[in-house]
Image (cartoon, rainbow over all chains, first blue to last red; front, side):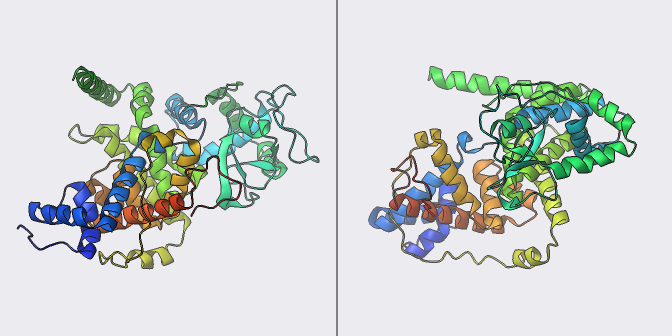
Length: 212
Length: 219
């Protein structure tokens, strides 16, 4: 059905999204076109809305944290290497596995050559033996980095994800609480798990690929 | 014209490569799955982030969604777009995560409010076009992202799926489990609200005064 009523501002605002989607009938489109010719305010709304759609539709607006692609690839690879283990069991164990690695091996990433910032906490010890691409979280105004899910993360609303290497380079120090917690878990008889974790993950000092 | 043909050929080659990868992964070559997912990995993350608004959770859900897609690859049918299928799995994972982590009481009540299709009249600030070249600047992208993050979640989710992930209206409705009419109404509001937010910021000169002064809050 063709709508031949003249368009007023209220109608134009209600239909502007459909208009831009090409989802208004020919009559309404003509009426709206006519309205845009004479109403500067609605024309401004149209141009702004179209501009918003163009800007947010641009690929560059879709960003992911540094190292995200590499971590995803690694996670897939880990799962492919462990087909006998059930998926749910894997996902349940990944955080503790990663945490165990904090303690059981890996490379030193806090050498004086790579630390770009002084430690944010002068009372803390620098990190040792942490896999450089381990996913950790930090939050605004805090000094420590944590394993994801650590209950001692302050200001969780402002949490951000980065690799352990980046955290160290930015001067963050390891949270002794979440590491201690996992150390206790490790000492409670998880040696086999620990060995398996070490065999599943490559422990290496990988470079930071910034442009993922 | 020649340029358009090159673009078209590249797109066709990309599509046939994708189809080949899907067939091979469905045939058991799971190690090729990352190659299949890679072009969409950022979109997967963005979809999860739109729903969860928490970077670490979004990344975790993105990983879970990709693993789930791998497990379900044999159910994928060629008539669907792989990217859409992947995004829909991600949205589903993110919504499940949110339901698990929150009581859902308040949100449930909020969700039941119907949209009436009206847009609150306000005095519109003049709009000056933000050229797409401006997206090269990280500060500009951050300002746009902040404006988006400030939207109420039901508007943000629809906007991200339709205007950023390029799902169509029907796919957006199915992914979120809402009606097509609701998608259209929320989309309208989201677009107008973003337009208002950015026009207001523009008037305060946020775009023309880069780099930003510390503490400046354009919105």
